[in-house]
Length: 288
Image 1: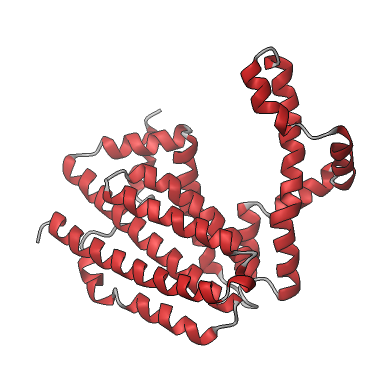
Image 2: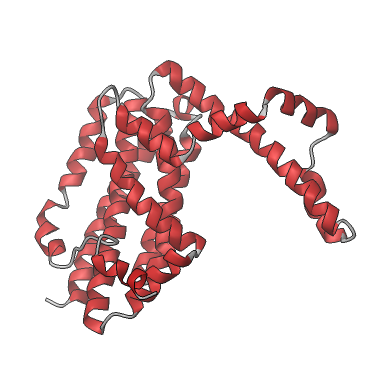
């Protein structure tokens, strides 16, 4: 079989598994809207971003899909950071996510808007853009008193990607969960591409410098990893939602749905590679 034919088979099966997962998930969500009010926007955001990832991947826009996947992964981690905490800490983290971080960000945005207007205040367009972001003096004073620099840093550090991953890895529902640390590698590499820094640009240039055969092998493996990650995150977020709702019996459906792809694993292995773990990605470092 050719890659194109195998790709169609694999893609169809992944899309089917993802659709089955999400239809069941949102059916359960519809029945439990009040209990999920605080975390539903995160679920919707992740699922929507993953839909974009698969669409871009099928359209061969692999690097764009990688950037969107990074966004989904960061929000997915925040979702896990909330749902895997004990009930008391869940309440604290939900408040921090929706309120504390919003207040801290408003202080930053207000300060940045003031600085921008110092340089661009003569422009009507810039005044329209930045004036609404400036907090009233009394409100800003109140927030700055509430959120001292040390308190802001404490909350922001707690919600940094690295700290969230570390926290989840130490205790995932009361047990160590070291596997979650593997997400940091994909996140880091995706971040380089998203920010367009030297490493991100070099990764893409190195890929494009390969021979046609090696390039296609790498791109095919990358495509499969994007589909696989999208499905895994959809399944994981569904299972976590069931735990959050204490509907443990419903987890079986999503676990069984993962097994629906077992019969194509041998086909996938023909093309699957460890994207970003290929030593060829380090070539550019030795050519300087």
